[in-house]
Image (cartoon, rainbow, N blue to C red):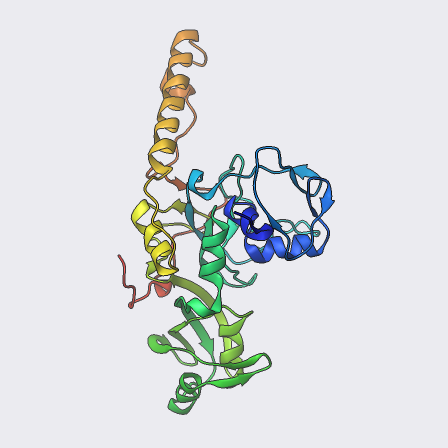
Length: 317
């Protein structure tokens, strides 16, 4: 059965549908030597060659692929793009490397916003989670500068007119603060560009700090440092899939990755012991990552999540 080309590539983990549609428009995708156009349908066969930027990409049936999801604590100063011509850091720089697939960001956070950003290898999952019709709830901790009275709260709850249409917060809750620097937690069900900041600016209030603390029912993992990532377990992956009406996964990569790392550590210890290089095995072996095997760290990471970023309304622990 034939399917749209962007769906085939998304299911194989080569980007979200939106990203792939942009690639097709830019003339970067070909099928069996013919330049692809939007709307093309393909029926995958072993002999088919699909190229992106001149390179043949692997196409696997979605049933053969394992859906993986990462929770990443985006720091301020990173861009939500794969490459930056100015050489600035991006959210993809610290993610674990993949073979035959790629990480797809579920939405974006602007350069001055930090907090929870999800990545997946399943383009269809990413596309559905981002689509406005799904109304997936996002929660943010916001530090604002300015006078906030009851009337402004009512305006933000009822809705204000932005340049790209009306917008409002689903919930607004005061979290504390001193003087004109105050913290609020807000929720909304779409991800327009700089929407949280623009809503506050529409009522004359400036946002001085913005942290995403929840996506759907998934909170920013406790103890995860800025710039750190944690791979989600199967139950959380299936929560996201159920949320957007996709079939549940039955296998996870986590046990495989954990066993692979254990075997690699054992090989290093045996090699050091056998050759006696650098003294004892304990001295010669590289430092292990702290925490569980499904967490990644970086030497440039900062402190743990700010207490103000912890949402009181988290639905999942």
